[in-house]
Length: 117
Length: 117
Image 1: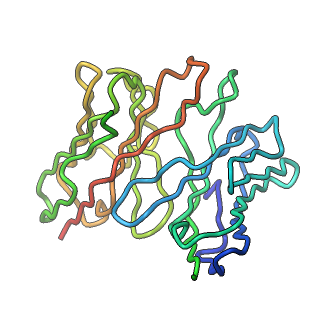
Image 2: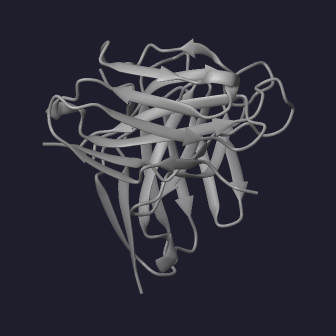
């Protein structure tokens, strides 16, 4: 039973436009969410995270939105750049009292983002 | 500062043989995780060390897999005997003490691609 799902295997976007990557989860115990970016032959690289006490977190061109009632989060990249082309993984964990990640991460299948010049 | 390093980067072995993967975490990181990604699917948790102790090994597939972290530094993951379904990319990740007030997101190594033929 997959607890974190990324239903879009791939997404193609024009440079300069917005990229929106979606993620759904089923486990109500999850309260900390992360996005990782992965280039071929490399390990995942942390991008941005959000605690369940927030509904939005922004870092430069990257914004993550969390809708707890819908058990849905999304990553917005504005503006998209060709260097953003990679596999994006959504991940979730049960956080600790300090509001940060704790222990194991449960990942989605990943979405391949291609940004065309 | 060196990141998480994994050896070897690629291993091809025959069914029934033994393979040992190694992970060197970031210096000072007490938490060490092993994950596996099979055939482009989601990245799945295998186990979590805190220093030399196994905190959570709920993701280990079966008793053919043995993980160790003697002395709380580097870790090894041994597969004996290897089966065809063990093929995939094995990632190691490390993070700081979960009690730290700062960001404790996990940093991943580049992975070991294991092919069992």
